[in-house]
Length: 168
Image (cartoon, rainbow, N blue to C red; front, side, top):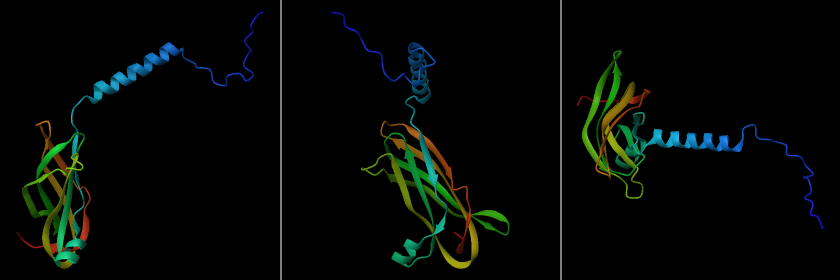
């Protein structure tokens, strides 16, 4: 008794254009290139939000202030971040430093050690004609493995607020 293997009733719709061994080789080369290019280097960035009139400080503390929120994000766990920052304002067509923050340190959140948030960088202000503000910050992220990664960030965008920071 002979056994016959039936032909498929439906012909394959897609036939590979490249032999399988070559396709596997190309895939392996791409994976290798991504692994070598990526390395184990930690990547960190500093996210500087646009300075804004803080509604929470007005509501909770009855204080008018321009607030600068900054977040340090790393691809590996960090223990803390130390930074210095500035709030700049446009006055008479020139950008001047309205307020500076120096060597401020924060520990990472135990629940998410990839981020360190600075949510209380502010300068008191008084209501006046709208003024345009921009912020920047720089510093270092200290990683759990003991290394230190430099950070720089800028809000890049300026927005007007009807509250002026007084001289420091």
